[in-house]
Amino acid sequence: MGLLEGKVAIVTGGSGGLGSETVRVFLREGATVHYTGLNQGELDQVQPTFTDKAIGHILNVAKEEDCRNFIKDVVAKSGKIDILVNNAGITKDALFTRMTTADWDAVININLNSIFYLSHEAFPHMKDNATGGSIINISSIVGRQGNLGQANYAAAKSGLIGFSRALAREGARRKIRVNAVCPGFIDTPMTAVIPDKVKDGLVAQIPMQEMGQPADIANACLYLASDMGRYVTGIALDVNGGMFMG
Image (cartoon, rainbow, N blue to C red; front, side, top):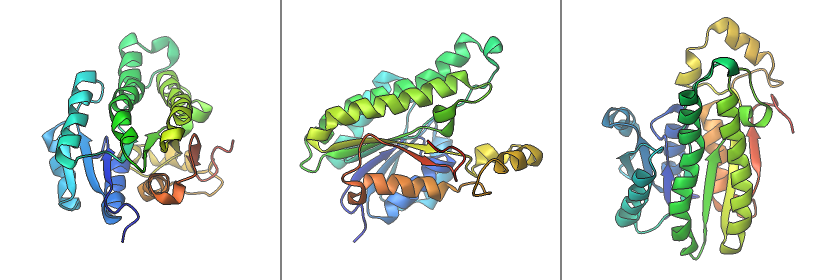
């Protein structure tokens, strides 16, 4: 029996590098997984790599009403929600003096406000579960230490950690655990476009001297989603090869 047998999970941004690997790991462990993408093309691209227990949804996480309807749809189809992985995110990088309000708003809306929208809708359903639930928010090393040209992204990802800790205190009595996972430099399609010279410089800053893999993040999520992490709540789990230690 898998670690998530009988569980119903949500993974936003499930068509991306980290999200799709998390979907695959959860499916392997027995969960029914509802995953999201921005359009049908994104869903079609990854669906062949999933089992028939994966259910795709088109969702713009920045729209509160869409998030509300999405959660209703998940419950209508599967009857409950045990796990929510808030993974969807974007970057709009610029030096601060050149960053526009549109750049700021886009990143805050998708990377932070969406966490509130989805958690706010899923939380009452988890309260109804005898076993509670697990909310996992994907932050970043940038939310831990900041980064040049990413004031908006750092603010969102750092805010996500504070949100996770506050909600963890509210959810604990109901057995709802809330944690953040903070990836470092991970080998995904997003990082594949980085020039090799820049990439080599980044790897040189990592004590373990290698990039992480999507499976490293997915397995961290599995730990927090399953009974292996039953006594873990309110943490920011750094998965970065030692690039940030704190």
